[in-house]
Image 1 (cartoon, rainbow, N blue to C red):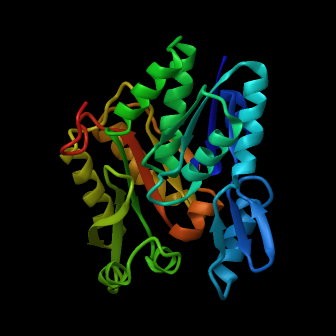
Image 2: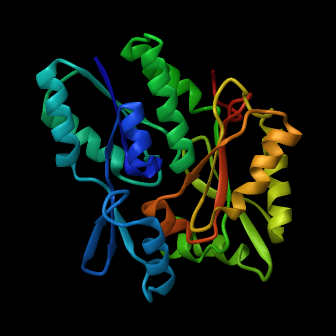
Length: 288
């Protein structure tokens, strides 16, 4: 049997993860001495209230190797194969923790895939892995498929402010200052290596949506064979224009709507929204 394992930044609800048969290893969010497991201990509404009221940005931490090891040893005992699809290694040491655990498990049937993405994008790659298992693909073929698919995986987001990403060390001060002008909404994306950057900036939310729609056009449009997911931090009102564009302008299937969890929410801040999809064209310079 093939087991699919991911981390909590895929932002699956517990119900969705259970329905898909996906195991989830949690990252941690800490407000001072209070530590919470992402997606388990802290309801999202409470988290965003705490984030807005906090004088100091909470910290986030990757899972320990021991958390992965327990899953790996259980699979080893059962003779199962594990495919781990995890948060971009350019953003976190989560993949590294899994690699350490793999060495300790001393078991060959463990595959670790750097999604080179996060939240909505990571979730799409995990869903693809689940589908490939159901279709009868071998573990090696699934890994090869995911490594090709991630070259087509796009995540665009607009944040209300860059201060959370800057304070959390995910964006440089220069980028944060450039995106922090009055009325400017920064548009963010992950590149082919899974590194976060500001790809555009626009006046107000309407301009930000237009910038993202142009970005969709530049990558050859959306591959309609696969799901689309839109997401939000705090309030769902920001996802409406994405859903309208996908269904009314592109005439594609209605996207899934997903709340962004505590770890990614710590860095994005409240008021962020985004869209993830598989593009028809890979990143420039990437091979199929």
